[in-house]
Length: 253
Image 1 (cartoon, helix red, strand yellow):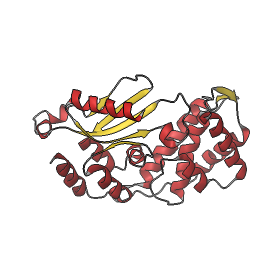
Image 2: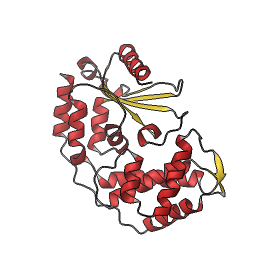
Image 3: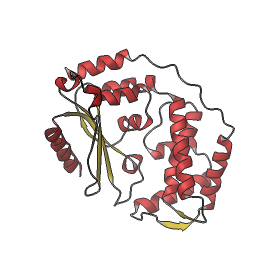
Image 4: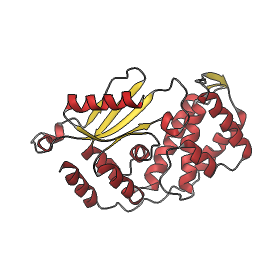
């Protein structure tokens, strides 16, 4: 599958006239709880030739490449200037891409330089709001009835455990779900319930509808109640944009 994805990325370069500098897996496969029929969520960063940027209508040009879902392949890319602007704002999904355990392509100075800068530009407040909002949304939509979509427990647990990670001031949230579980979940019964859920999903069962899992539902509800009075981390001072401007110019060269 890696060769198929890399061939698709080469095709994108040819058809769009761009150069891809970084590509990785996102979503459940990168998090570590994919089933056999999970989609492949490929995310990439690309650069245009200089002339593309030196244009009167530059700001009107599209800065995203999105391919239609085909054969379980979900492929989306951000233009480098857009990606660097989001990195400056500590965009959590982008920080996860850089930490993905599944890398498809790396070229030039951009990937390693961003990893070096990742901790400095990381904003706990931005990540806090992102992950808590994600957890609440998935919980509200999928887990409030007596019969629930079982796999969605993982999609609520991961962002909620990310918030726990942030509470402990451990830095950028790791992409791998198991790192979160091992670091911030002390209760044995919660770990065992998560392990059973992961085993069922990774064995191939997409975990459709079923009865609520009381130990996990109680844990989630307690966490949401606790966060009603939890203090959000103070905003970090915005890091200077000049290093990112320099990286952009270097990449164009």
